[in-house]
Image (cartoon, rainbow, N blue to C red; front, top):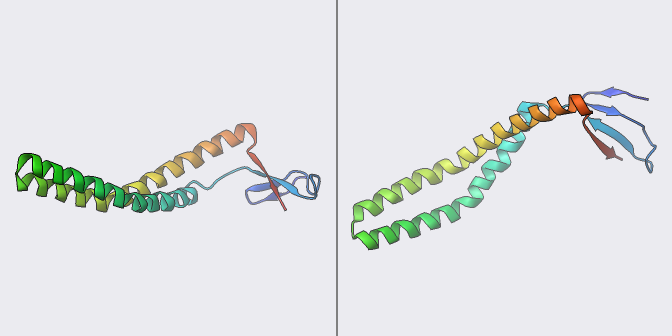
Length: 120
């Protein structure tokens, strides 16, 4: 018995240890892009302190080696700009990769039928 329930089809209800097996036929690309953009943006925030520390060490080393405060200040300014942009760039890349991944899944699922998921 096959029922069309939005994006899931019931393949054989109650046949596998009392669980229903459903098939994921399609993923909404924009929704999946949003779902991937948020964790990627959060990863950018998590990695931000490590990036800042590495940049500060590099700027300090450059200032000590050249004894030129302007070069260190320029490196620090670039570090601040990159630090502010990093979570945004990670989030945008996650969004774009999510859309591409969902579109590829939808294309492949048409050919081979999608992923079977066991639900209770």
